[in-house]
Length: 338
Image (cartoon, rainbow, N blue to C red; front, side, top):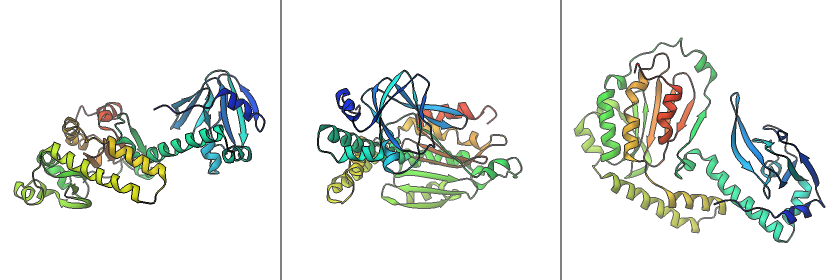
């Protein structure tokens, strides 16, 4: 659903307490990291919103007539979280913080609409800041990199590589992981290759993270004792019912409305990770451990979220949606010798 706009005539009225500015195409309104002093209302023209990723500036949004921007950093006394530039000739009305606060406190249609839009943005931000929650809303193109310790990257070639207990049984383990995720009660798993520990979560104990030795998980009798068989669709339905029960309790909990709305949207739209995506992802584990110089250290997958979590010996953490997983590998990793 698109965000509401502020009428041209209403922005015109704001000139009484603000300042009108004109920018030409290519002008930077403000840059990521700048101090935040003003809020901007777009009377005419188009702008782009971009984030700096390494040496590249990546466009993440567009703004046009009737939009306003820059208010969150101003209200929170923070710095600019993105760069906004003119994509065409632009007319803006600029309010400083005292003037913007005056507008918010005033009674009237303009104040009501601005407050409504800000409430909607706060709800959206609450979702985006929780990376895993936002990917649960069927967003299929998620790629997030969380920087690790630079010393790990610098010494990657110096550290001796060894075969872990997981590596020794990995082909058989992958087969059992298929079974656990697709045919048994497991909803989430996390593999630590160095320590050879496997963390698993069951739908019958969803708030507990169990640690199992890798040797036990390739034993069918052990699986029968600990992980009851259950159809994948039935397992997904149980998770959906759990989310529904939590959602029903939200109205009885004292919490900000934007959080309640965000959780409600998440629960209402939740879908399990597609079975075919699980099969494709697990099929790459052996190859990822055999990459020369750079190799997989930790790996996580959950049927409740459309995300794959990976840590390599040379870097931090990568969180990638299942549909982007193969593209991530093709772009960053050569598996031809794996």
